[in-house]
Length: 108
Image (tube, one colour):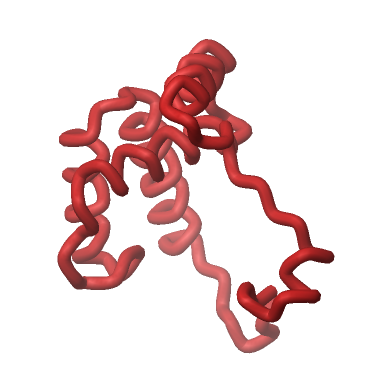
């Protein structure tokens, strides 16, 4: 952690609000709600102010997030995992550090 970063109650409250809204948007498994969440938080600098990727990419991202966010209800995580697997995707996010070190394609 950067020792120069000042922790303030305002930042903690803003982060808590972001996390709560993120969890609600992801748990909805609704692309429209998830996109609205991202666009809202672009104003606060939480996300780059650039156009969102196509809806199918946003949807896959949302479902993968639902599998990985530890505060997500288990029923939502299981539904998201099933949705991903049915479409040929890996449920959640898999990262093999050894593989990425060897081929040089992914930064750590």
